Amino acid sequence: DPALDLEALLDLAAGWGRRLEAHLDDATWLVQAALARGEHVLLEGAQATLLDIDHGSYPFVTSSNAVAGGACTGGGIGPLQVDEVMGVMKAYATRVGSGPFPTELEDGIGAGIRERGREFGTTTGRPRRVGWFDAVPLRFAVAVNSVSSIMLNKLDILSGIPELRLCVAYDVDGRRVDRWPSSSEVLARATPVFETFEGWEEPIHDVRALADLPEAARRYVSAVEEHAGVPIVLVSVGPERTQTIERAWRPMRRQAGVALA
Image (cartoon, rainbow, N blue to C red; front, side):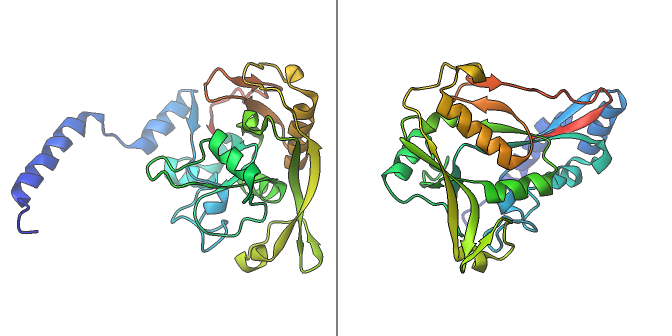
């Protein structure tokens, strides 16, 4: 654009650089130095396992590794320095954009979950696709990330739904499939095999102990945990940080190490 003043833009960018210079460092050595001092380090992942360029539902993926291993390459740590991997997931399934979604809900139940869960793009406002919880990709995610514990988010959004469904396997061309298929073409032909659970009517935003949840909610959490094969240690029942149930927390090892979430 001839109207752009290149020199002015360069001066502006250089000014940003001067302001940021004191805050720049080699992140790899910052992390390694912290570990050498015996400190714990928490790394937070982005996106999701099924968007991983190698392990996701290709071609409906991102351009990088979103699995826990990506924290090693991105954070400058070795695999043996990782002590804990916490998987973070919702109590129902969502997907952004195109791609196979066997448990997708395109009815009033799905619309209600979307509204209550505020499942809209942060910047675009684009509605996210919503579906029943799917244990097939859950088991896959636990395996490829070496997940050691789970935080289950947005359990409160399911309050008021009379009957809940949880997908435990797929039917593909008349054959039961328990493992996550690597082919999007196979996924497109998958029909979910559901287990059904009684829902609960009462709101649970104020619950702070698992024992105080409605019995139906406890059964649902237990079923998800059973299919995951690892403990659910945190359950979110509202948007505030304090609206969290903590249970069966397994402490990290005493030596210096890295926790991934």
